[in-house]
Length: 182
Image (tube, rainbow, N blue to C red; front, side, top):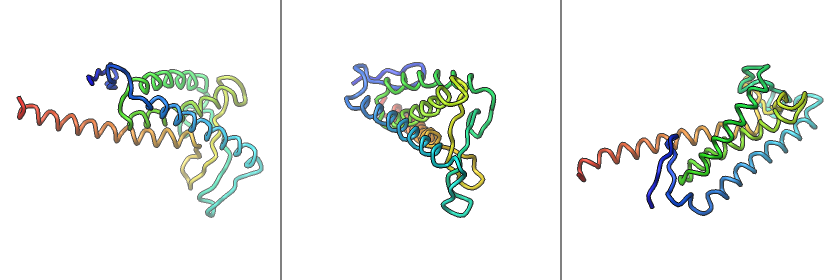
């Protein structure tokens, strides 16, 4: 089956992605958003009176609201961050739909699910539309507090790096084999 590559370098078969890949992507995205929103609802309800520590004061749950980006950078830019998240989501949906590589589908779907999970907070949580604070609640030592969506984005990014390394190795191997076949 011939493959085409779009301008982002995402390969896709000429006849579209294999059956099941859109279902896989949808299940991952919906699963991440649901897990993220359910755990955030739990955190808002159960952690309002203070943190719950599981291992000393190093690992536990502490409620925080982040109006910035990762690690609370860019506070006060919530509307801009929400618009950027919408643009990234459109790019990711387009990329997921065009790929035929399962690892790439999984990694992009995790990133998309995480981006959408945090976008829901920015759109619908207090203080209002496009200004909402993202609920963070997982605390590990002095590391910034995070949530399920952040975890999905991080895991997706690691898988994306693995995919890129694997693709580079494959491309180099093919380049070495071409002169021998030519």
